[in-house]
Image 1 (spheres, rainbow, N blue to C red):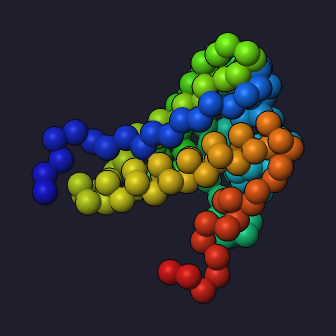
Image 2 (tube, rainbow, N blue to C red):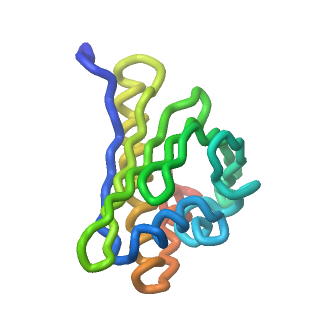
Length: 153
């Protein structure tokens, strides 16, 4: 199969919290560790390079923040080879936020790019569901840690 265009991973979720709170949950590792990575070398700021870790899996990635528009957008490069991740925050009625994540720029053959996009879509869907649970209910679901349990291929 030949790809006509490069695949993009997309995930989105309505989170019933004010946009400033949802935005802060993504840039502040003290909050993000409740639903995404386990450790971070620092807060997300434009032009800054941070390291995110998922210690339960023994993996980490460098995150280079290329653009931040407070309460609207975060653009970054991450992974190896690097891909682009764009978080978009839309203010909704009743102090809610529609949070969208797009990941694109995958490398490799067409099949490899599709696999990366599918995996990324699944991962970001879990991150957004975890963010919703934490921000709306104060629940830490452990979705990322439960995604790849030992002994399962």
